[in-house]
Length: 288
Image 1 (cartoon, rainbow, N blue to C red):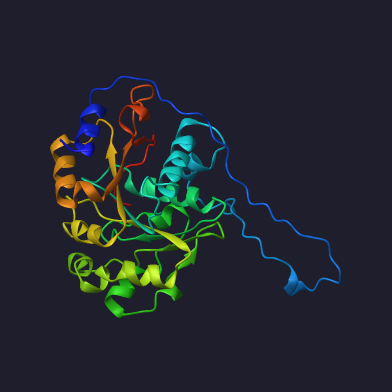
Image 2 (tube, one colour):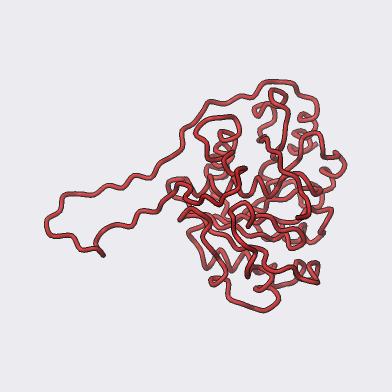
């Protein structure tokens, strides 16, 4: 039985308390040496703000931005595991997905994006690939506007549609206007090339793709083959084990770098018991 299967089995049976020490948020520090001449404006270093600056953010983003608490600590632990993998190679692109709707994948993607952007060296670009039920823009108080659909359908330039998301080191490519043919767009060769284009154009950023649940869009399994790794979101007490196992089989165990157990019961799940991560939120996958 593979590591992911063992993790899933233990998650449904283990009864332990959460473990892990609290970590502090990293802060950007700028250092300047002695000045030997009058400093011109263009000589001054530009320091990127890594703290949230938008009052329009959804309150659920505070889960990752608080200094203390098990949820914030879990997201920072996930960030550490991503930036310091056992293989030594930091993944440039990650797919965030789930087996079925309503498991909180967009919540996890948005909070992980914020935490990555608050790191010392990282920039993060989020892409909303859930063309049927896009959600990332709402977390950051943004409109759908132009986005991925315009790139796939109308061949519009990516750079003109990527917008800041409240932190200077965090940006978003929204899903764009609702298409009449989401399955065709998600299964197109152009989408398959999207990750390569983003990695080549934005080589200083970690790219997070919020993809549709596999049960809602089989194209997710195809998209998973074009990223460096997959994070699977499983809603505690709401996911059927056979659906999760089917998703793991379709994507491939070797591509899944972690499983997020979302909306878990406090003091029920222990991260050290199976080596993955757990979070808590009240997010539901719904029409608005």
